Image 1 (cartoon, helix red, strand yellow):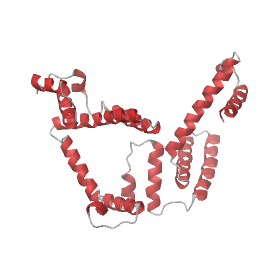
Image 2 (cartoon, rainbow, N blue to C red):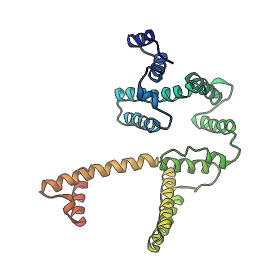
Image 3 (cartoon, rainbow, N blue to C red):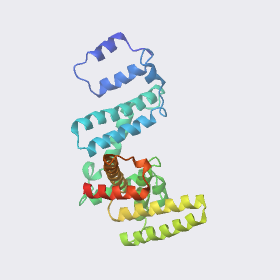
Image 4 (tube, helix red, strand yellow):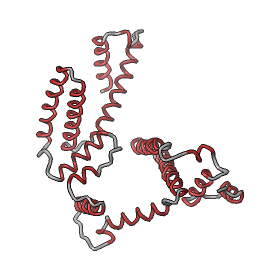
Length: 273
C-alpha cells in the first residue's frame, strides 16, 4: 500500500511528533513508496540493532548523561515500533496490542496497587510478582522457572539468574564462604583437565569455574556482569598507561619480553592508584 502525498506532507510539517506520528512514519517507510532498506528488513535482520540500541541506552545511564539517554531511549522505541510494524503487516499483532497486553500484565502483577493485597515493602512486592508470574506462565515446578530464564541474556547474567532461581527452591549454598570453596574445587579440577590435555574437559571445567565465580558474586551481592565490565575497563586503562610509558622510552610493546612488560605494567598500576 502506498502512503498518500497528503500524509507524507503532514508528517513532514508536523509541529510536534508523538507516538501516533512515529507509527505513521514507520508505516510510510515500509509502504510501497517508502524506503527500500526499511522495506527489506525482517525481525532477524534487525535483531542485532535492537541489542545494540539497548546497550547504548544502558551506556547512557552509566555515563549519567540525560541528553544521551533521551536519544538512546528514542532509538530503542524505534526498534519496538519497527518490529510491531512488521507483525502488523502480517496481521499478527499491532503496537496497540502490545500496549494492551503490557498494561494488563502490570495491573495483574501489582495487586497491592490495583487490588486489596497488603505489602510491607519491596520484598513482599517481589515475592508476589514472582508468584503471579509463575502462575500466569504456568510454571508449576522449580525447573520450569529456571527454564523460563531468557537464554539470549549475556552468559554471566544468565548464570546469575539461574543461580538465584535455584536458590529460591533451596538449591544453594548457605553463604558466600561456602560458595567460594567451590571456586577452589573447580580451580583444582580445571588444573587436572589442563594436565590431561583434554580440550573438551578443559572447556567444561572452565565453564564450571566461571559458574562458581558467578554464584559467589551473587552471595556477595555483587552483579557479576557489572564486576567483570569494571575489571575490563580497569584493564584497558592500565594497558593504555603501560603503552604510553613504553612508547615514552622509545620502545614498542610487541618487541619486549613479558618480563619487561610486567615491570611497566606494575609502574602503570601504581601511577593510576
